[in-house]
Image 1 (cartoon, one colour):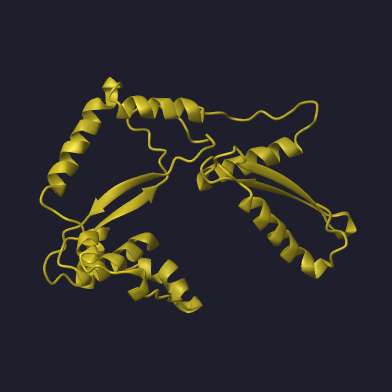
Image 2: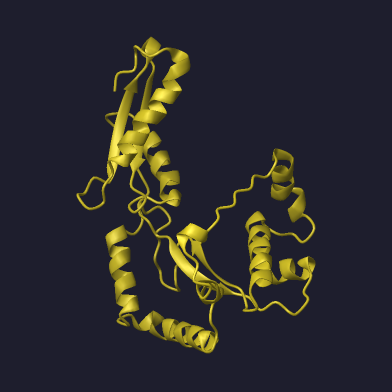
Length: 238
């Protein structure tokens, strides 16, 4: 993509616009899942951009993918680059399918125990979303509320706020959300959280450098004691 005619102070904006168009052209249905663009800039400068569909390349994958591409770029054309490889994504997917189908004896009992645990936990317990839906809200009556933390408050949230209970920032954010949910409904708060999905599951599966989308979703339920203060709720979440 030739941007040599664009002034230097405008090039960044034009690159972002072109990248947005390229990203919008990704389509998992027709197989367009990865694109590479080379930008020619003023003064002979160049920018190489990689754009991948999230379903084939999650955030974790980009870390070592960029590292591998950089290593290949800097290596000798004759010697090539020696890259570390781990279990292919398709092999991992087939193993996961065997596990969910109960065909893997190693994890069969583990998943069965998990299923029993969550079934018993959910029996007779409805999530807060059911209470909210019972109000029969419609889009016309909904309100979107947006808030922004000042840079000083953001800095404290990322640093000083965690020193009191030795927490991570995400734990404080979860505690704040649960506190709001607890005040809005009488039911015990429960959430669905995302994980990186690369847990070994007790098997010898190394996907630490496998490119793919492994994101997993898991439930998280809390039972706050009555009149639990903010300090107590943070400790429960941690």
